[in-house]
Length: 174
Image (cartoon, rainbow, N blue to C red):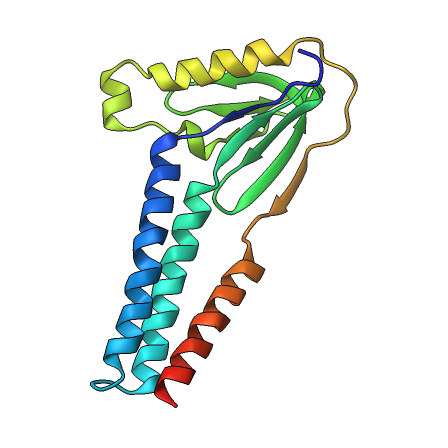
């Protein structure tokens, strides 16, 4: 598998995130435009902040994934991102959710591998499938660096969308 990359996602999270964003933004623009006769700018600014915050949180859920490569994996959860070399992986658990067990004993739970009542009733097939795909990709464990962990909040995108929507509201209410 030299040079290959596999991305594991939950399709429902991505579809729901895109659908909610595609519906929320036009609705917000319409509410700002039609609400100018019935509300104050302060009320509209609060609505903009709440709606953009919801869109931001949904986008954090939708971006969750596991990226497998020859050198290791990247686990992107809602708020954190982990870069894990294969040499740091001890095992992969699948019940009740997909978790990466590191050689240090630490566990990294994967947001895309979370269980649900339906998954449990079906015998956790999705989790077992993800575990087998991770294990099959693991292959030879080359020497790697440490596990890197960082915040992954996309605050610049959130701030930019908030600024654009507030500027639009300000122009409408001017």
